[in-house]
Image (cartoon, rainbow over all chains, first blue to last red; front, side):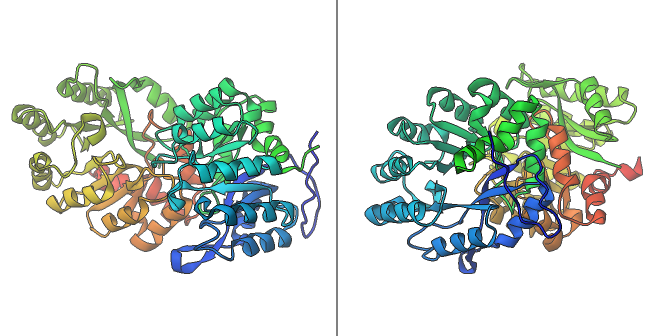
Length: 263
Length: 249
């Protein structure tokens, strides 16, 4: 059973069908071209009827983004019940990254780990990355990978990490991008700890394909917003033509389970 | 009036197919007036037959399907010449180049003779864009400089990269006044809005790339875009109508 999120609104606390966006961004590093506010996320979520979202920075902690924990933490506090933080880490920082992950999850209220091998140049199956994924699993939170078409981000690059960390949940964000979607579904078939996230990849029919092959409980809605459009991304799931119960799982119930807001 | 800037009809050697009647059904279902259609890369590699198929389908469609020729730069002078003869005789509205499916680099010297012919005719050239090493936006910038009087239209917003890593090069391509972009597969809503504000709404147009991409979703991409209604009208049909000279028909 899903606990409906109580969303603070100015005039109403009406609970609607649970829709959770598992991939949104907030950041504040204008010098690196990364400037996305929590307010922009909320505005786009409201437009799309999205109740809650997982939010993460665009740049990695530590290193270029030393304020990331505070930035995400403050956004989640300001929009309590609507925004849930994922800590985006650079695995090359080794012990420091592990300690940051531990702190963020155990004390900071964060709900997941984000890894982007393009920005960190750390291979998903490298020792440092695997250490972080295992730690996330022990802490009971999922690891969301950017999974697209670039080297080190493709499904076949991430799959060995999933196989090395069977007790950790791994989310393939973008489920393979433009050219690697079939491979994302293939690796999810062989690794039961892989979940596919729908943002940005442009093929509604592939969502249906994924649901048919690995089950609706392993596919989750994400938008990559606010720069991508949550309302459009939500339409993509609708256009996939899933059964109503499947669509409910994909649009929110699976995410509620992963974020720890379901019981 | 909504016009699809690019769809493919026929059977492709790459495993997809779409027949004209099915495409018209899709247009009807989505309340779209017409679509520019190019042939697929047929299993027999015969582009002459493919172009003839498209021309015939357009003729029989009562104006719903608008023909675009396709040429393989690797084919000989005779074959390329025949395509341009058909264009001159007003059978086709534009030319499609697909570097990924015909496997050539868009800025390869071999392609220059095609650019020259397009330049002479002021012919719109649609380039299937975003394929690494073959049709990157920066590579197409070179091609577009070979034919400054011909509109060069980049599919997929000039980029197929889910990290947004192709956007800067697409922006640089748009610095050329003869470069335009289609919206198929463009996942960044903010980029669509930025093209409108930075380069003008007349530089970007709706295309479905059906059946490679999904018509209804690609149409929604524009219907839900965060741009003005005036900009949407240009993107959804006004620009294709102007660039492909529909107003003169």
